[in-house]
Length: 247
Image 1 (tube, one colour):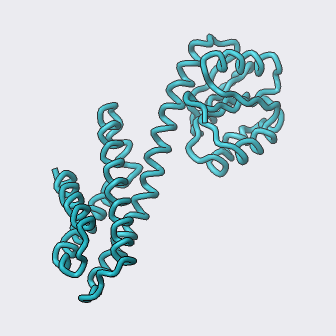
Image 2 (image 1 turned 30 degrees about the vertical axis):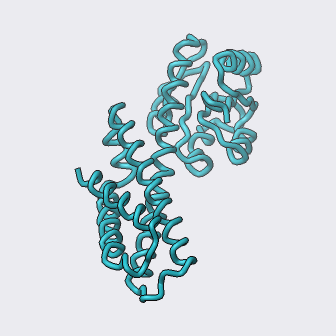
């Protein structure tokens, strides 16, 4: 994937389409171009883009159908609408939809570039937080599974397969939670703390923390049944992590 971002431009005005794509490519963006809304939908379904720039009056988009369908095609992707025939109606409907900017042709390229940069940056933050939220749900299931297995552990439960399972699962949890911690620290520095809290649903983080503490407690109580240096080191990491989360 292009480091700066991949953009889909949809416009039936060939001159604008090609010139805008060329200018953005010079800035380092990867751009794909289509001439109508139907093809734009096909491209969005088949590829991953960081931004959609779409003309309002192009074929297949008289009532902003393309933008209305975006949540079902590429959830969260930012949209910049452009038009050579502005109206109060389209401007009002654009505000009601998830549109980053409503720009009237001809416009200054630097202004477009500013919206492009901000839109892609926000989308990448959104995508990182969304992916982390999905992983949180998986981690919580893993923790519940660990609690159940450890609570049923017997004296001969120090088999290689069980130790391997715990080692891999706990290592994944440690690494993932550390990544989450770094992500939240980064977002807090950029003033997006409330945004990440809303997306991740902070009460769920507290629930995860409670489950993590419970799992560590069970591992501590049954450490005699799992004679593994690696598991001991992972347990120590989890204990340190829970202390950090509690701060």
